[in-house]
Image (cartoon, rainbow, N blue to C red):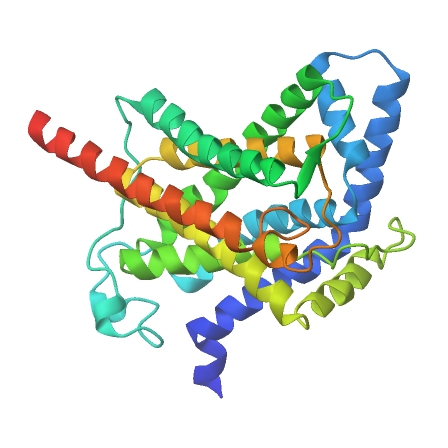
Length: 340
């Protein structure tokens, strides 16, 4: 029993459970604070950045506040968790690694991980990632409109929609890449081999983003203190729908793999940040400018879900993005080797 309590698997599960419980507890508080900020900013004249942030707070629903609470709680608890797992000891021997109970020797890293390096062509990586993900996602949206599954909403204020989409995508992309591929993957690379570290980070990334209720299901009285826990009970129902779980989770997991692979191959966050912003930018544009127009096609949900990022088509686009990222990373590595 003592060994089970002290095992790394138990510690990790407790970390995830405690993070979720703390997030559920503070979600209503964040929700009320965000709505108050939106009301105050609307009543007063403020600068554009504050206005944008206030509008984001006003439009966000309880699920979005829950996601932000999860990330906040994970960051706060990650320090104690690292100390608990004893990942900060110097000169560790492979067999004394804190993961030795659950991982075979071939899965344990033999070095001190992969620190991020300053890239001389950081801007090139950022732009390349943005264009790679954005162009392929845009091609998918164009094809969906051409076949008649979606149609453009009219009228469209392209300037306003584009500005709000790029700001939101940039903010989310930078923060999430710093957290998942910067902090979490960086730590896991110190105690695991690259493949297992990339897979573990991607599973965590997919799990966090999958925690949303089914479409059309909302929490009544989101400002109540138990609203976060009621939201969790609704989220659990999503796991009872195999198709919803499989298509959505696989897409998120594949995205996490590509972003983590890009970070590992370049030893930098610039390429994954560009990929994240580019894909998310087109996705947000798609949500605001197009509407579903083929209610009679029962097979459409399999090709693209109502969230517009799950299904066979988005997964195919991700595979293409992953292949192009691999080619770009290979060419960059060859050029670096020749330069040296």
